[in-house]
Length: 298
Image (cartoon, rainbow, N blue to C red):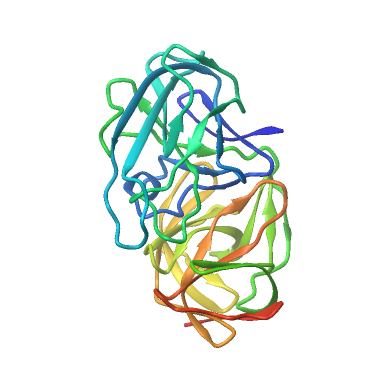
């Protein structure tokens, strides 16, 4: 079932309820500026986030990385929606099966998602979505502001916790997924934090990317501290009108059992199902039991 997750320039962006999404969990400028959203389907098929006509397809070379061996090709798909011809929907990381001139519906498969040098080793395949002026599709910068869609603003779930026992659900060389404290606001569920006088949901890769976002019902102020329980992880540097606040990360550490971790990779779930994603130090091999202790400290 597709649900509206964001909008920009009158264009509505959709994802499936089973998907994960993130606005800030990326090192790239479009995410730092709140001008992109990444959608993570559970298969390698990429469902279209909009309705419209495919107007442009571009294949180019992605940067190489030493983290893993992957194809170097990258793809850009641009779709014009019925809303406007001035702005196009720019989609990256999808090898297209559609062609220029095709009309696509929301949820229709655009192609197969690819992984290349734009990704960190722990990053799963996903679609990167921006809204661009039709004459500015290729440059790395130039997207329009994107706003999270909040139809229900009630916040519920548990309070932030900096230490807990979590059930290990997935263990891979590049990350571990486990059940932990979860909060929900509207469609979005994720890791609970406090920001200023309110509670919010964390979105970002921390501390390794150096910044993140908090979606909060209570408007944050510049300089407000961000905490996971009593552990300060950053301070607010930018306020957005959709309920997000961007913050600069401050040093903190994460341990999973006795293993020191690189950080937490926070996205948001749409169906109420959310798992903590913890990133190991480079090259560190871990062996975990069914349950593991998570400890976050200054």
